Length: 188
Image 1 (cartoon, helix red, strand yellow):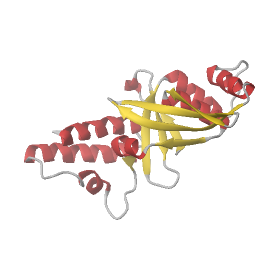
Image 2: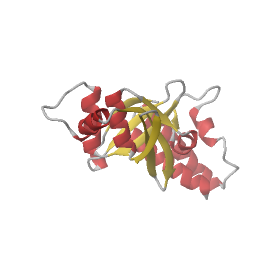
Image 3: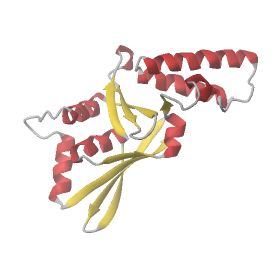
């Protein structure tokens, strides 16, 4: 995955949506993160160096000072709307896995220039397909629905249209909320 960008909206209460995009694919993954982590990622992406090391810069310096190397980060789980990640380090030929928030893991990944991976299961649960192959976005979103009641179908169609519009407008925070509503409706 690669970082597509960061977005915010006035209703987000200071939170940002970090948008990851498949390098060889058409899925995007919005992850809601705090403003501090968004700033840490944005500063590094823009190659802006603060006069004193920020927390993620300190962590990078500690990892390097211990003669370790950050190999990659892996967003490996989504549970109850919370994303989980692993930081994979190598020290003296040994792999070390550390639990981390995705925002912190990605802030380190951009500092080390290492790969960011996302578990397929997480992408299936929370990813947004932007350009489905051989079908429209609405057809892709409705593919797994087994003839719901007419009232539910109408609501689902409305949500699918709202999701399509949010993606086109690159409002990924709204798209993530709509995606969650669609998943709840489909589970019923």
